[in-house]
Length: 135
Ligand SMILES: [Zn+2]
Ligand SMILES: [Zn+2]
Image (cartoon, rainbow, N blue to C red; front, side):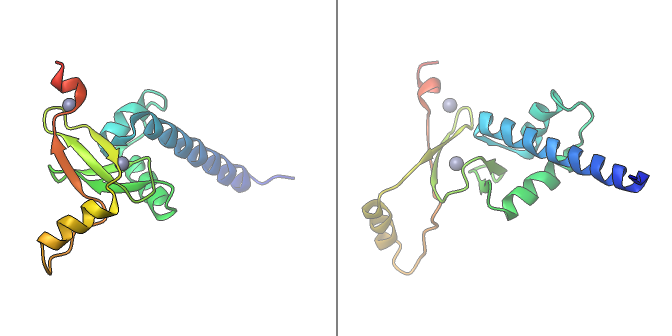
């Protein structure tokens, strides 16, 4: 015999699981997105889902290190589908982020110029992306 509370718990659990996988799928598509951008994408598939739910899901996924978060040059918290440490190229025109890997020598060279200053592992380098150059 299954109790109503068990059914309810199971239903809530299933809903949470489905919401989480849709968030992950949409983030994979977007690559980088604010919680709000992610919400707009997810809302098309799960009508009525709140921005607070998106925040909660991305926070949980960050704790699990399934995804990461990076600030862009505008100070927005960007949810990143790539959980591994990496740097970013940010387009000043469209704001898009592209994952880049800086080689050790480059990082060391920047570090040397800062003396006692400390560079972060995830640097943001700015410019104009390919699609904006040809726009
Ligand atoms: Zn661009
Ligand atoms: Zn990234």
